[in-house]
Image 1 (cartoon, rainbow, N blue to C red):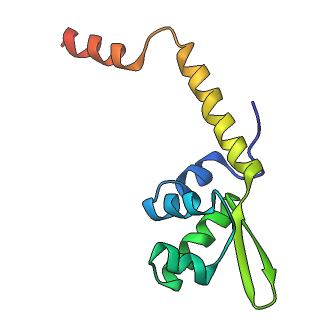
Image 2: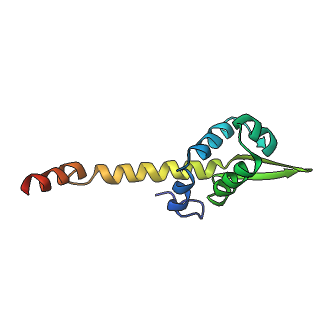
Image 3: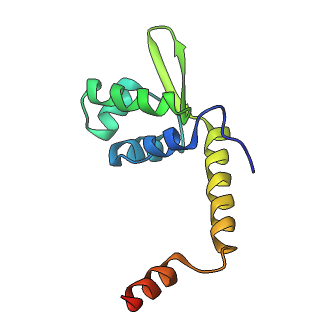
Length: 112
């Protein structure tokens, strides 16, 4: 199993639980953005975007670099790969369970 880059999985997946943060990730997929350009691209306020970028940065999903007065954001690809591997490992684990969870719940309800 690939370890996440020093960030607990729950924190990383929580960071992915917001629709705006998913839009940010989608926008950063192809190139990096400064905050001003990302605000315009996503049509959100700077304060709202900064809050969500902070959550993504704390989860190591995005990284930033400063250039002069501007801060540029991009995806942290090693963390994205680690999260994908974590999901793949979980999928492999659940596929090897003797009984699917749905079948277990169905049998419990039919016994009642």
